[in-house]
Image 1 (tube, rainbow, N blue to C red):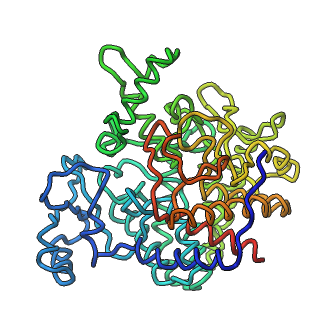
Image 2: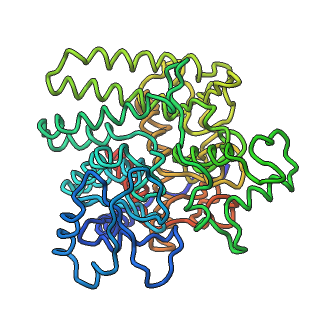
Image 3: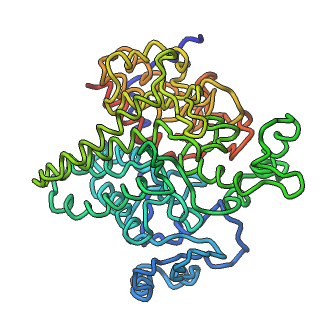
Length: 499
């Protein structure tokens, strides 16, 4: 293996800290700059056409319009069309979903408030003492649940059919640790429990095991893919998959493609649902993740275990001890099922479980560290650290051990999985290994920041480079600048090394 990068100096780290601090302002959106928020590079739009903003039917649209007129110039207001969101969600023209407060977007083509990105962004805001913005960010998720039914993949109409990995209670308790505001904590509990129900009832619930899966309720191709995920030849992500399928002469995919009519509805269901997972895309859940609705994922069920533990803790903080055991028992039961179905003793790794074939996937993926992160692995299972070499690269942690041309596979590394692995390993006192991962990733981010002057979404952790576009053949190949969750994880990893 190549030697890891040299750890940066205090001056180098100070420069990147200053960049991150400034970037929170750059990436912030609020009603005052709703025109900037409405701008969506992922959807085609005719020039001089007003940007669409949809207001929940539970809101007073006229009141929202009046409030916007007071804070926007007439020209800015005229560049928007405000509509009430249709009850049946049959949207013909896509647009921004209104949020009443400030939030932070990831950056680049992702100019909206994303589900799981925002947890890592929040950690960065708290590290940088941006408490007002952190408070508002969490409040917007509560608003989404109350007005749009759940926490969305992001606040655009084409995301109304899916959520993203559930990190709400992690956000709530991280913020509460700073504010100690019990009245606020009590006020958000109904939304938390409603969001929990979203994940633990059909179609997300797998009744036989009590575990959950990812599932997008929408039909047909994802609109943002058709409009935006194109290569230099004008081929969409779907075009490239079809070409790969035909040229590779792959077998066993008849359920997803019909030579007469093209991709089937099952294909689009799988494609949409893997976007709810946040890991779009890889081959982790079968060919381009198309079998994802057949899987009970390690990551999702560990997060739901944590959510159950968190809700128990919130009730305890609020003095409502009568239901604490109910939530703790749910968490215990889930952890037992994760252990039974997803731990592979022989491989020494956790794998996703296919409830159709009744087999673990055997696809080596960095989500194997999630059970360590929340503390449900036994000391013996935590010896997963013996397999760390499979994932460790000069610039940090590989997402998977397989190269597929997908951005959530090797040779790429992503900030969130670094933090989860570092915190998971350190929880079981594997401090040298955790520190090594943190140092390698910090060194890579700094090295590439000094080359390009920006922080980006993902990195090639083998070549130690942010120049990844030529290696990504499916999905979108761009490396977005900003970048919200990399900023947050960078600050968290620094704080980890300082302790």
